[in-house]
Length: 271
Image 1 (cartoon, rainbow, N blue to C red):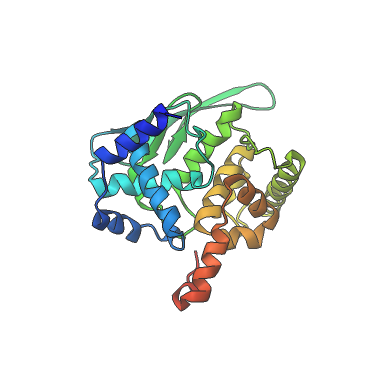
Image 2: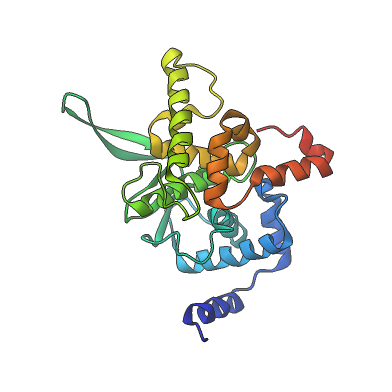
C-alpha cells in the first residue's frame, strides 16, 4: 500500500544525502555512539537528516552552524528514538532555539504559605509545553561524550515527559511496561538522592544532585546518564537503569561493556 509518509521520507533523504566523510567527522565527535551497529548507524544518519528537515533551528546572533555541527546536534536528538518506532515522539513543537551562551529566563515559584516568588534564572536549556526547545550552544558542544552530561537529551527528555501533559517524570510508557515498577524504581532513587542531600547539601552524590529538584528533572538527568554514562547510573540505581532501558528500548550499558571487552582503551574510560 502506498504511504505518503514513506514517500516523503524517501524523497527527503534523496534530496539531502550525507557524504560518508561528513558523517564520519560527526561520529568522531560523538563517543557516546561508539558501539552502535551498522544498521543503527544508518538509521541514526537518516533520522538526523529528517529531524533537520522537520524541525526549524533558530540561530540567535553569535551562533553559526556548518553541516557537521547541525548533524552533531541532530544525532544526539535522535539517539533516544533509535528503537522507539515510527511514532511522532517529538510532536507538539517545531522550533529549537540556539543561544550563544547561557540565558536569563523568568522563573516563578509559590511557596508553602502561598507567596509567589519571581526572579530571573540563568539557564543553559529549557523545554516549553507546546513550545520550543531552547538550548545554549556551548552546552550542546559539551555534549556527546561519556561525561554524564548531555544538554540535548536532557531537554528532549522533558519533551517526551510532556507527551502526557505537564512534565512530572512519567512519559507515556509502552504497553509491556508496568506503571508500578516505573514509579517504584524512580521514587525510591529520587528519595534516596534527596535523603543524601538533606543530610549533607554538599554530599558527593552518585549522580548529579540536580536530579533531586523534582521528578521531571530526575527523569531528564537520569536519561542523560543512561546514554552518556550508563555504567554510573546502573551502579548507582540499577532499577532506574532497567526502567529506562525498557522505555528507550535499548541498552547503552551493553554497548559499553562490549566495547570494554573488545577494546582495552574503553576499560579505563570513566565519566
